[in-house]
Image (cartoon, rainbow, N blue to C red; front, top):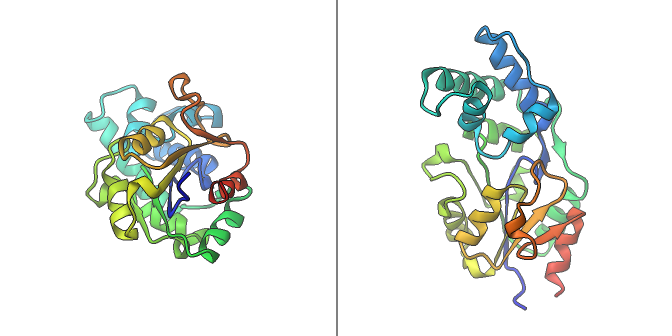
Length: 219
């Protein structure tokens, strides 16, 4: 078994429990545009992971490039920048793992569908920025997950091969991106926002507790 030389993490649903902020900011955006409905946490959950534009499309049940979708997407992104982490916090075990990886000199990066400005604000607000060699969003000029582009760039910056890198996420997009990048291992967080698709059962490392990631270093 090859010992991992680097880790790439998704953000929302993996490192950070951001669902309450996503719900609150989506509702602020809906209200600002005059819509007469609001989302519950359970109604928001299925829309996390595919990016803000996809969230807007799903919520309004309109195409991704529809003007109403784009208006909600931009309103959401602008509001998120002002309210990046009112309620968000790292999941249990996350800071322990990040500190241990940093102590061991193992580089880490983050790839997320969250708008870039909001990503920066969230990572800064929660004290995560200094742990990461790189953090990327599609707005930085890369294709969205499950495309491998952001992961490939992270490996380049961390100066490691994908075959020595572990991808950690909580959605189909993260898992497929890890496989498309040919990562050493792909890990699925049970604390995330989407159930593990049946076709990936037995093909990923299921993390019941985030601290279980450290066991990969001792295999």
